[in-house]
Image 1 (tube, rainbow, N blue to C red):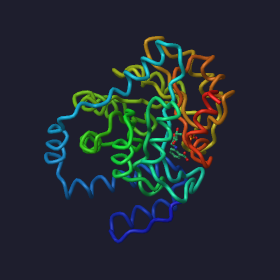
Image 2: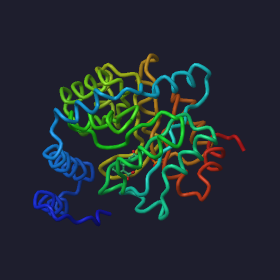
Image 3: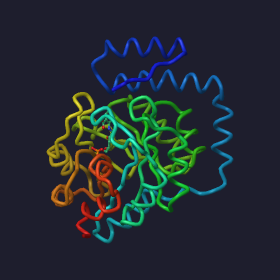
Length: 285
Ligand SMILES: O=C(O)c1ccccc1NCC(=O)[C@H](O)[C@H](O)COP(=O)(O)O
């Protein structure tokens, strides 16, 4: 779905190479690294680190809210804002993340997820800022976090939580990003798709384990991934089942096998009324 062209020679080279790489995750990560390098040349690490450290407002406690839901045996819903995705194409032609955030919150979502990746999801940092300002929910910055620069940036743009994708990182890189995020009071959702990634994730000092039902190489979703991996997660971690969840039955299924929260985007956003979609999904109407 990558329709974006650039006037930057480094990005142009990446765009050209993307056509030769079949793996979507690799393509997104290559582009994200190039973008981050470019942005870091405009705003050096020292400067973005200062911005992050100077943030006076505390984060909203993303993991805390999900823990509270879990303690009450209620399913936590992380409701996602995104204009588009590689698998779905454009989901919302008229995309208003602030309005969607309000609808999600009023309908009973526990947390928000906002895509900030631009080339494949048509998101940006402003989307996160306006969505956060419009509601009182804690917000996950949904992006491909590969560099410390992006962790500082996440705090600087007022994210409460970041996503770490094990398939995109080496163990040491993941551990360093988690440590930095924790120092900046950001929560971390660590995403896995198979047993090997899960074992690597469990070695990290994080409470939120995201089991992605989507294979990021083929883009296909299958709830059987949560079914297979959830029993391997120790009870002191919070399981978030992610992607491809559409119905109350799906939610019930993953809850019955140990998921305490779900991350849902496309099935909510593809309905006209995102609030009604949340209530239906949670079995509230
Ligand atoms: O959704 C994609 O096509 C995709 C492609 C490549 C990397 C990540 C991708 N999605 C990210 C996600 O995991 C979802 O945004 C999230 O879990 C919500 O999934 P859904 O409810 O299926 O929109």
